[in-house]
Amino acid sequence: MNYSKPVLGITMGDPAGVGPEIIIKSLAGGKVFKYCNPLVIGDARVIKKAQQVVKNNKVTVHPITDISEAVFGLGVVPVFDLKNISTEQYRYGEISGDAGNAAFEAIRKAIELANKNIIDGTVTAPIHKESLNQAGHHFAGHTEIYGHYTDNEGVAMLLVEGDLKIAHVSTHVALREACDLVTKDRVLKVIRMVNEACKKFGIIQPEIGVAGLNPHASDGGLFGSEEEKEIIPGIEKAAAEGINVEGPMAPDTLYPKAGGGFFDAVVAMYHDQGHIPFKMKGFVWDKKTQTWSKIKGVNITLGLPIIRTSVDHGTAFDIAGTGSANHQSLVNAVEYASLLAKERREA
Image (tube, rainbow, N blue to C red):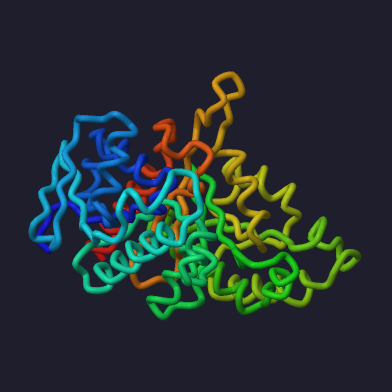
């Protein structure tokens, strides 16, 4: 590639969800083009239908079959056209194996293009896990798909909204299994990954706080032994490597401190322990208008050889096809992918 700005592949997500709509909304504005050259990956017919839904005539959808055909610039939406689902094969807001397969194939193509360095990074719109599995693709989500097809099973999820950064020891597993996944080696690995990520964001000496697994971080062993046997040894090894890390701390103390700027990043032990405080900061429901007035924040996969960022919300089947979906999170995801791609180019 010989583009001054990074080329980012944006997967369309589940056609029956809000992904195609927020893509059109994001690319209709000028902000995304300040960061990168966006290339949508999916079915051009799906994107054109979404354009009709959001009633935006400011952009032209341009189907291509090779990146050499792409025209980048405000007003043009280049789509790497997979031609893998017709608009008659799905309905907004409905689970469908056809839609799940189309979304999956877009992800696979994005990974392929990134692995071959044809694009600089990838940004993913939301998929529906039931549709994905109905299509025969048995993955818990994007993170697991990317880990599998890049031969990197030890990846981690990092959520970012403003100054709040939260990495996870485990994500899409049952809570009983999540407890078993809290091991000293995994805790150490996630601390290392989030430390390196913070440095890529320009934080020279990151301060990292680690949450406990049990209430009050077990209160010295009163409520469990995971802190003593697994979390503390992982933290001590990280500290011995020169990483500025503290914990384990009770999450109800750790997150207010992180939200106030005491820590640059937090390591959560399981999915909801990280997602709830993150969404309390980035998502705002407006009772009066019955809409999300704010949906901000980015999901970044750590530990991959390629760049992957994403929105951190779902397909929103309840409002898909109405044109009301908020696209803030997708713009944030593009911004972070561009930042990481620029850092990689300069490295």
